[in-house]
Structure formats: structure tokens, C-alpha cells
Length: 519
Image (cartoon, one colour):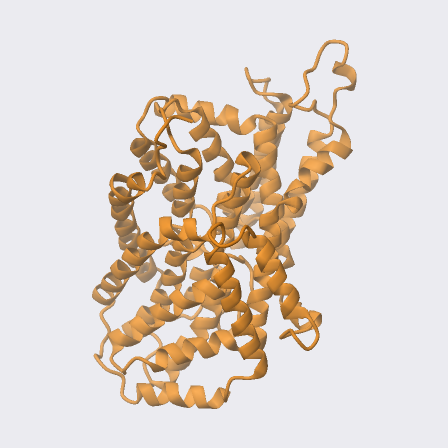
């Protein structure tokens, strides 16, 4: 999932190279993170900010610097952040309990309560959904169904280069529904694209090769916006919304809000990519034959592929009909599907097979990210920070449109420093919720606006390091980083134009920005 899963096993042939000097950046990042942590927790108490909130702001600064510089492996950073939460919060008063002179000496939260807060993210249903999504990705890889779907779709297009690009985009779109991991989708698609490039005897550094690979990665990122289950960062937002407002956004509600945006941005992507990286040839000789041979090589569909296809399509039906035909939430139906996939005889893989390359570190990172956000809210650190943002940006009485535009611009800029949309969502969505709650704009739809701003969290189109799927594409060595940046800037510009258009038309019409009556 920039990820429903941020870390999948990447074929060695397409693994991205480590940037020169990155070890120096990582060491400097780790030192800077600890300095920021110590500096913030040592500051004099701020008015309106509880001691526990100040500790969480220090931990937040540590997390942001570590995640931006990738000073620690993401899974390791999650464990370190969890430990910091336990031992720093243990010696501070609980923000939820009033402290008097008589109770000051014994008001410390204690390691038990601090540990419960540090592990609170693991009890969120969104974490179960992310873990289940990892199993679906593993099943797709184990059975080869994702590869078959990709080849079947591509076999339906002719050998014209522009049509092959459309075919690759179609595969990215279809896999977004059934493979809830951006990294897994691109890791499946990129080797197929590279196989075509080699089979077509196309130069690896040709514009056509770069066009095909970049388009595959960007399509995956674009459909993270429109499909709730396509990316882990969406689950972060859904988890915080559920925790804060005791309500959920169904798969269909998310799709209705985001899919039109993704569809138009996909069309824009096609024209941007085919104009800015115009292929050297208009047709690939023997292209259809190459795809046909690859399809023949994998043989007929196996029983496990048929079973997995049936399970996934049934699951998709449950997702789409949530709140309309039944009350089963997305996480519950997905866990049931995983149980079927693992059952002897009925299922498609055993436990040992499912664990090959299973990214448990991603699940831990996801859970700790939710814990950090929950703690920021409970210790009132997010609210205190939100009030500063509201006051300094003059958002108190701003229109819903102005609030959305300013916060969107902030998210787009800050995403340049993040290599993980999941980490960005974990850091920013609790603050976004608090900012929206602090403004005085009548009737603002906090839940709807949070969802729309979560769409912007997926705008990791500019730098190869902005998302794991971008790095998988970059690791193919089919294009220069500047090719990704210049086309990515245009995709981001197109997304910004659509953001303004939808914010003035479709989203207000649908009630996502303001309610008919004030909250």
C-alpha cells in the first residue's frame, strides 16, 4: 500500500541503488532527531500545553526527522519511537487527569499507562486491515494471479506504443482494486514492463522504456486517491477518523469522492507522459506476439488462481456494498477473506508460504504511527499545535475552500521531505483533524475535509524518493531522475488544478466540505 504496504520484497534486478553520501545524511539525521527531542522536552512549559503534550511534540519532532532522513529503518524507527513514548510519558502527568498540589507527587502516568498508549495503535481495526492486505499481496504473488491479470489486459491492446502505455495504465487501475499495496502492484508490473522492453529489443535507456515505467508507477499512486483499500496511508486516515469520531467512511463513499478525481488525473497523466517523453517509435514490431508467448509460458489458470480470483471478487463486492447491503466493515470482511485463503483445501496458500517476504515491519510502523497520532490527540499536543497553525495562518473564519487550499499546499510541500506517505499521514492527519476542529467556520465538515486532505497526502508524484513505488521504478535504470521530476511536476500541477476545480464544484455539491447545518 505509499503504500498499502510500504515494504515488499523487491526483485534484486530492480532494487534501487543507495544514493552516495546517504550514510552521512542518516547519521546526521539521527543526531538531529535526538537534539530536537531533547531541546523540545527541555523547553519551559508553554501556556495551555500539558507536560505530556510537550513530551509528545518532542517525540513528533524526532519521528519527523528520522522519517524524512531515513536515519533508521522504518521498522526500527517504530520500535524506538514506541520505547520513547513509554519512558518519556511514564514520568509525566496524564493530560486527561487534573493535577493538584496534593496529587502532584504521584500524578505521573507510569509505565503501564504509557505502554498502553504506545501500543494503542495495535488495537485499531485499520492495522488489522493493513496486515490483511499484506496477505492478499502475498497470495497474489504466490499464485501468480496478478501477473496473469497484467498479461491478459496487455494482450488486448495492439502493438502501437501509445496503446501499450494505455494497457499498462489499465493494469495499474485494475490491480488497485484487488492488490491493496502500491508497492506490490508496481513490483509486479515493473518486471513485466522490463520483460517487454527486453523482448521488444528496445533500448533500455530509450524514451519509450522510461515512459512505460514512470507511467506504471504514477498510475499506481494516482489510484491510491480514488480507492480506499489501495494504500496504507488511507487506512491511517480512516483509523484516526474512526478513533476520533466513532464513525467510518465506507469503501463506496471513498470511491465516490475520489475516483472521479483519479480518473481525470489518469487522463492528464497519459497526455503529460506521451507528450513530454514522446516514444521514438509509433509501433513495436512483434509486440502482441511477445505478450502471447508470455501468456502461453505461464499456462492455464490453476485451481488456486481461480479460488483466489473468486475470493477477491467476492471481497470487492462486500467492500463496495458496505452500508448499502450489509453492515460489515472493510476490515471484518477482509479478515474473513484471509481466513478462507489460509484454510486447508479451501485456501490458496499455507502460513509458511504467506510469510515469504511478509512485511511485518510495515505493520509495526503503521500501528506505532497510529499510536503517535492518538497520543498527540490525547495529550492535547495536536490541539495546541493546531491552535498555533490556525492563528498564524488566519484560518479562524476562513472559508472551507481557503482552508482546504492552504492545508493542501502545506501537505504537498512537506511531502517532498518524506519517503513514505504512511509516515506523512501518521504525522499530519491528527494535526489536520485538530486544525479543522479549531476553526470557527460555520458548518465545516471535519470528516469530509479530512478525507479530502488525505487525498493530497497521496500526491507523491515529484521525487523518486517520495514513495517506495517511485524507487522501484527508478531502480530499473530506464530513466534519469530529472525525467521523473519534470514529468512529476506537471502531474502535480494537473492535480492542483483538479483540486481547485473539485473544491469549487463536485466536492461542495456532494457535501464533503460543509454540512447543511453547522456541527
